[in-house]
Length: 280
Image (tube, rainbow, N blue to C red):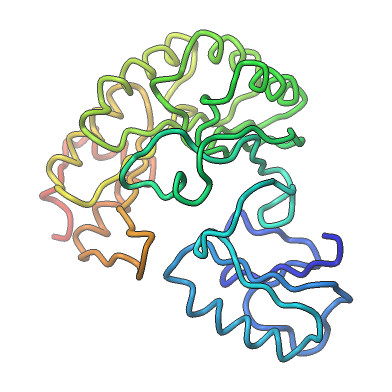
């Protein structure tokens, strides 16, 4: 990547795998020729580890070592495919015009802006549907050459319209990720899910992020509503991005895990289990 070493505190499914991508401390034997070292920190609770990694890498190179990433509110003015996430995962926009109180995106990236479109099959935009129609049409044109297409960033359920549905029905879609983070969002989510189901998409392709962590009984109801609407829910425990990682009880973690695995979710729905069964 133009001679830039990128260092990550741990490997995820999105971490690049090229020869200039490293996990953790410098290797003991060989570091490739490079211009800079970038320590990439996504979560605030990884900052201490990333600062230690910065110190370690500074001791192994005479080139600049830079520490940044979302945890440090680094600017996200562009997207370079393969730099900080795998080559096939792309952003065609940055930012979001919404102001959801639990979301850090507007604070870090600002209002939505459109970027040059690169080739890839996983669209990670935070709010792709806020882009103008001309931009979306260019993305759809690019995606016609792709397989296993995923819209992973979370599609705004209030913006799923005929234009979007008409274009994705001609694509080789693997996953469409929506979001239903509050009870107030349920009616809009159901309307969007109904449109997608009528267009021929099923629960294997329609996924839904669901923020949880405040009231287990109420969260259970919303997760079931998502399933009955024709989507597969994926529970996400709320994390405070501004500091240390939010800790939850054993019962909450068990509840979240049970609503993150499709096989377990189907079992819940068939057996009629509910939140009182978790942690027992």
